[in-house]
Amino acid sequence: MPVKELALEIEIEVKNPTALRKGRPRADRQPSEPEPPRISRLARLIALAIKFEDMVERGEVQDFADLARLGYVTRARITQIMNLLNLAPDLQQALLEDAELALSERDLRPITTVVSWKEQRRLFGIVSNRRDFAQLRL
Image: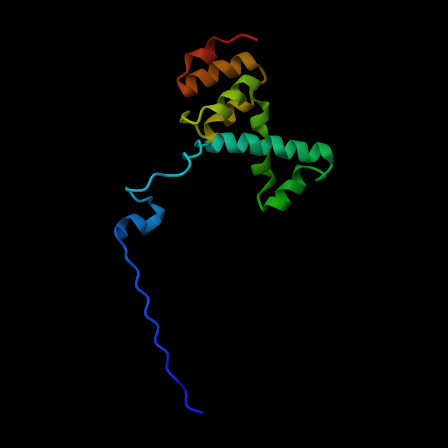
């Protein structure tokens, strides 16, 4: 039985090939939905610490060492993340809400070891250049 050759021709029109690279939207097309708000790395870490604490309380994991094993990180790293919960509640709230704060988790590590929330606010005000937290009283 003879084999028939089939030819298929596809024509694609590309108006602006540079707009298609790296997921950039085309200039002539309006996005259907606005961009989601930017969530800072610190906000994600605080949310993760809250989730981890909840998992331990509900018995999903036995302890933070279990979390470290499940997450393929060291117990020390889990401790660093969990220490963010030692911050005063208003500081945690500020970090969760303000994506523009140019702070890293490493900047906050010394503050998480301070027991006094008043002192934490003072230090946070210095580190973040926000005087409003340095003035707060419990």
